[in-house]
Image 1 (cartoon, rainbow, N blue to C red):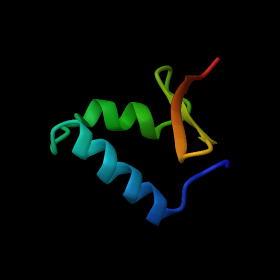
Image 2 (cartoon, rainbow, N blue to C red):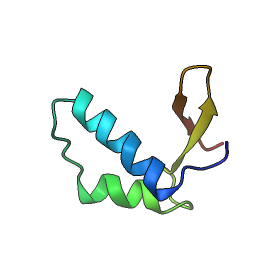
Image 3 (tube, helix red, strand yellow):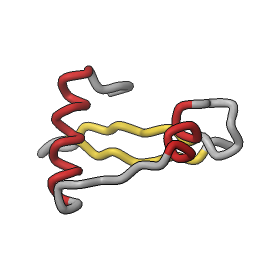
Length: 62
């Protein structure tokens, strides 16, 4: 699986935010780092299907 649809991404976010205590604070700096692929701190998400669901991992850019 190369990417999540908007619906699947929203579902994953609901699960992860629920696990974290129902609130996640994200700074503007963190958002920019994640959104800008040429930024030195940019990362990508590896999405793998497992027998029971999905595994999401952050893979640092080389």
